[in-house]
Amino acid sequence: MPVYLCKCPIKVHDGYNLDITVGRKWSTFAKRDAINRIRKLRKIGAKELPPPYPNGWYSILESSDLKVGEVKSIFALGEHLVAYRTRERNVYVLDAYCPHMGANLGIGGRVIDDQIECPFHQWRFRGSDGKCVNIPYATGVCQGSKLRTWLVSEVNDNIFLWYHANPAEAPWPLPVIKEIENEEFVFHGRNEFFVNCHIQEIPENGADLAHFKAVHEKSILAGGINSVTSRWKGAGSHHWQAEWKPCESPYKHFARVTLKHSIEVTSKLHIFEMDVTGEQIGPAYVQLHMKSATFGRIKVLQTITPVEPLIQKVVHRFYSQRILAPITKLVFLGESVMFERDMIMWNHKAFRKHPQLVKEDSAIKLFRSWYLQFYSENSKTFSEASENLDW
Image 1 (cartoon, rainbow, N blue to C red):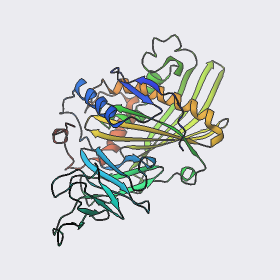
Image 2: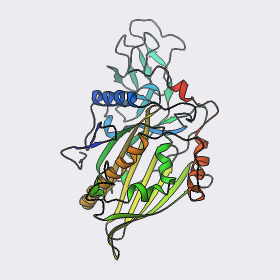
Image 3: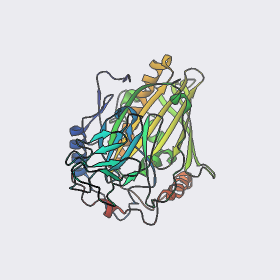
Image 4: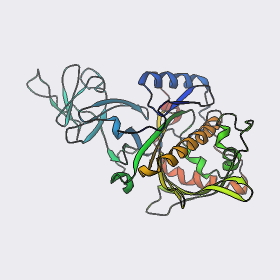
């Protein structure tokens, strides 16, 4: 069973005074309430915003959330979806609404072999191609009756969905972390946040090299909200050396940020020295590889899933060898605090299509040029994606 680092959940705040619980998963109703509250708090003009759903892989579920025979209703990327797992452990994702009378297959649907059965009239749809294969009260099936199917890939304890404005576009392969797949590294815990911003703002942080000192220098003991005024802000400052650059073809959808981190206790004493490599894989997935000569190796997976145009669900999952559990707990705490500081910025900033940059901000310009590849000419605009979003 997964071991969460926080047996008693820690409550942190996202800058709107909304509780974000770290260490356990939210109930569906708590998520809906938080999202609806966030949605009402701030509106950003659509004129400068890029398309809200870039092309790429998105984590729609963590593997442990979908057991054999289980059905899940999902709302992500502006789409209502149903996901289910068969006895053979295969995962299928289809559009949620039955073409017959519009029932949501994710609410009360039943898995039968590789098919999902509608709870309203028991029509069955095959997961591989979405075709209706059985109507129990009819002598045949409606020709052409089918649900849209979505390509999925289950790697690194996540179920990823391929989303692209051009349906015929072939996906790139997702890299497998061998230490997770062969269980050399064990799962130590997760956090989950909802962020009110455009999705591009979050990965852009890795290329915003100047923000590391401004936002992340203060001690983690100073917390996330009032770190500048906290009495603990000088109790060990964080030092960062960072570099961001895109990868070359055939890995053009990859980018890499390299960080050297240490905590300054005195001018001559630095502790917790660690090399961090962040691999940005497409628009919404990051693999963080942490390595220390003293503490060993830790892996952190960050997934971003747009719930709607300006609401991003962000999850971090932490892995290491079992013996490193105490160190991984410290990393968990530190990362949660640091991410909270970024959230305060994201939740209250405006997206600048043409920001005024100085030469030292060159990595931001480079990032934006790289990220453009994930938008297509026919990608949904912010206005198109914002229609009919009521729960």
